[in-house]
Every structure is written in structure tokens, then in C-alpha cells.
Length: 442
Image 1 (cartoon, rainbow, N blue to C red):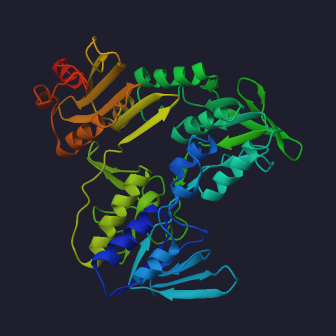
Image 2 (image 1 turned 90 degrees about the vertical axis):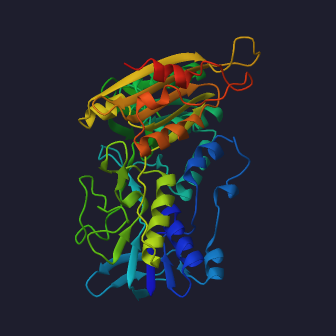
Image 3 (image 1 turned 120 degrees about the vertical axis):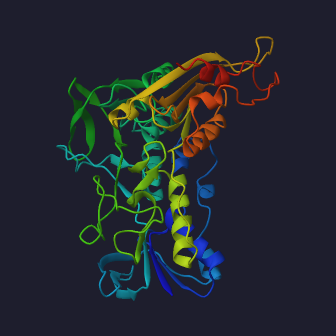
């Protein structure tokens, strides 16, 4: 069987490795328009902020590794058209040579594209995005220029907040803009976002929330941005508004979800039985919503690639769904969440309750200690847990994995009330904040 994989970042790599490692005898062909593969974009801000020594470690595999396993891999190769009836892919290689490649099974792992607002001045120099390695290089080059003194970051999601920190660490004046009323509004409720907003402002970042950007100004290169509230100098603008699924190759043939992502089932199969879609270009099943959704995360990309690989290889494997578990650490403030916030649940039409608790991580007699906030969100009718959020300067991230499993398994808030949680002063308190939050539920 000939399996063609278009896209060789996390999802495509996971699909290829699954097939190569478990199902010998197939012909695996991998194609990507980029010059590299396996770039961990989540480390871009760490590199730009010089919190790590170099970018080399952000790549975890290479083309040679797949060639050694027997795959045929072509980088700097653009796929331009797919004839789904004839099962032939057409494109152009880096030397300009046209090519065509047939397939028995096709995996679309084309990822997502940065959202670029159609604002006046969006053709100016000095406007940057952050996704590919080359874009990270371009931002790092700009930040290394002493003439770049003031940076405007548009979008206060994870990438925006992290790159804002990186730019500040490199000695820049940073302004952070978002139309939402706070940072990280898509992931956390206000009780948690106010912690991150304070961390940003205390560090020296000038935040402009609830403020829509209207225009870029400059003479050849950007020099300022205009919002609803005023005009601000900017030697560099980093756009981190978000991403949209890259559906260019299959949008006229395959069923799409409401945001344009390829609609897939729990086997990652599209509406064409010989075509699978994985990663950021495809939908995913949310255990919290118990419905299809779209969550662009590298961890989800890997899982979907593994599921697709096994199903193509001949092992029927149903994806277990996801919770969208995530975490962030900026200026020492650590947030972690999984499932739905109260705001997200209500937006989805789900009637929920929530329980909050705030305490210290360890007993008061311990020298090292930090405050911890927790919120557990549960469906009002069934009382099943559908979300959890944590905030601290302590590393509380591992607790979120338990809540992720709870959501996947449909555990109720009442089941958590007497959960067997160990106690040792080095780690926690006898009346653990997880237990106390569950006990406080209505």
C-alpha cells in the first residue's frame, strides 16, 4: 500500500512513525514545503528571550531519520492540487520541476496558518508572525537590532503573552494588545486571568485589553499602530491573533467543519474514506463538550497522527478524545487548565456550576510555600467534571492531568470529594485544595 503524507510537522511525523514502526511493507511518501521538520514552536519565545541557549534543541528529528526507516521524504516541495478521484497529487519541487505522486491512502497534515487581519498598512516592513522556524528567526533578528526599541504584540493568547515576556527580557518596551478584556481569555476565567494580567503589568509590560487595533502606520516600515483608543509607537509588530486551519488542498472535496477544518471521525477519517486528516487542519472530539470541536495544540496533533497511522495500517483504533489540557509559565506565574472554563461552557450552551478554593500549597510551618487557586467546573445536570483551572507561583501543573482523565472518564464532582490524595508537608497539606474544592461544591 502506498501512503502519502502531506505535512511533516508533529501530526505528519506521528503518523509516519506509527506506520514505519508498526506496519512494515508499506510505501511511505512524505512531502512538505518547508526546509525543516519537527520544529517545536512552543520554544520560540524561550529562544528569543534567551531563556535557552540555542534553537537547535527545538528540532527533535530530521529527514535522514525517516529515510533510514525506508520512507521517501521531499522537503521544499509544494503540493498545488489533488485529484481525489484519480488519487494523484500534483506539485512543484524546489528546483522548479513539476511532479505527480499517486496514493492508496492520503494523510493531510497541513496544519494551520496565522490569522492576518486585513488592516491598512499590513504591507509594511516590520510586521511579523510566529509559527514557522523561519518566522522565529526573523523575530529574533529584529529583537537583536538595537534600533528596535518598542514592540507591539497583537493578541494576548499563549503565543502573544510568551513573546511579550521574551521581548521584555531582551530590553524592549512592550505593549500587549487584545480585543478581549484580559490575557488568555480563551482558556481561563477572570479569577485566573487577573493573576496573569498582574504578572505582566508588574514586570513592566503595558497592557491594552479591550482595545481593537485598527491600522498600521509607517513609511515603508511600521512606526506606529492605531487602535480605538489612540496611536502608539512601534518599531516592530508581532501578530499573535491566532490560527486558522489550512484547508486549501481539500476544501472543495472534503466535508468541512464550521471554521473550515476538515471534519473527521474518531478514526481521523474524512468524508473521503481514503483520506485522513490530522493535527491543526482537522477537527477533534472534545470529551467535555461530547462533540466535535477545534483545538490546535501540538499534543493533540501527535495523538491524532498516531490514531490515523494505526487505522491506515490495519489496526482499528478509536481516538479517546481530548480535553485541550494546557499550561503556561510567564514571569513566574504558572497557570494550567483542562476542559472548559465557565465562560467557554456557557458559550457552548452548557449549564454548569463551579467550585473555587484558595490556599497555600504546603502547611504554614514550611519555609517554602506559595498560594494556590483552583476552580473545578462541572455540568449542573449530570455533575460530571468538565473543566479545571489552577494558578500559582508553585509548579501545580501535574494536578491538571488528573482532571483531564476525570473529564475523559465522566467522573462527577462528588467522586472527587473523598479521593485518596496523599499528604506530606514537602508536597501539600492534609486538607488538600483539590479535596477542599470538591467538598465545597454545591
